[in-house]
Length: 393
Ligand code: CTP
Image (cartoon, rainbow, N blue to C red; front, top):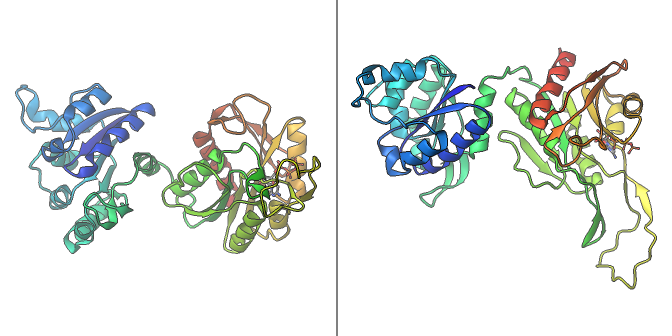
């Protein structure tokens, strides 16, 4: 998405479009903002002008002599037109083919993908006229992003909230991705588990869940049904993904196993604790009553269990190693009856826990190893899916 036209219309969520512009810019896009007159009542053009370092276009006709062809110029080489927020009024004009302002004119002249992000009061959104207009736009090839549910600016609860800018960005990106996982029911596990010693202490590890969440997002962007079973993290679940929150390895085990029969694909990116305290205590252990020896017992190995009733499901594991990475990872792959193992040496700086990047090797059943360069976990998620899709075919 080199050149993005961001259309902003007059809704209260217009302020969120500023953050959306920033996200596009941060990811390397050139952003040209086009506002309706009504939008300028909600947010100043100067905000967008400062963020994008470009003039903001509002009026159809301006003083410049080249103004008459401006709309064609703007949209001719655009990769994406995204209208966020899109009001009921602008949606209606688009559905009717009206071109009474610069933005609706641009829409008619656009040949690039168009993303529409409706944002309005729940009753307006559910009104038959708005729904019919959205349906028309969808039929004509626009990508309509579902609004979120929650508290709306007018104080009522319901559907109509503009989604978070990061989710809108992910949705826009998905427009350019293949839907090669359509119809695939997948389970992704992510994050650490916590094994309680007493009500205020637990055993855990530094996993933040970034890799698993990136995989869940990438799968959803490529059309899969995704259940994300997550240990405790601070991440927001990706849009369109069903999230199940768990705390302990045993809870993760129960949750994965109970969803397994319907799945075609399981990716186990979670850092599951192999042990738990043998006798967790139900009250806070006082320092003078604590012994210095901690008795542990093994947790069940979830992947190992899945591998025993694999049939034609695809199973993908992650191996965190600190030495002999490839050999250990391939051994784990065979022992757990997996199709692919993503192995990383967690002593390698820039790879592994709690960093945004990772450097991994992907190992297949026959021991073939593909070493990937250091990359962002979001990008890596798609690289891993590119390997998995070949196995699904
Ligand atoms: N795994 C699991 N259940 C466990 C432990 C691990 O499903 N109780 C999964 C992880 O989610 C990962 C894979 O098994 O996909 C490998 O995990 P890892 O911790 O690298 O290996 P272990 O099998 O636990 O072996 P070790 O800790 O001895 O290296």
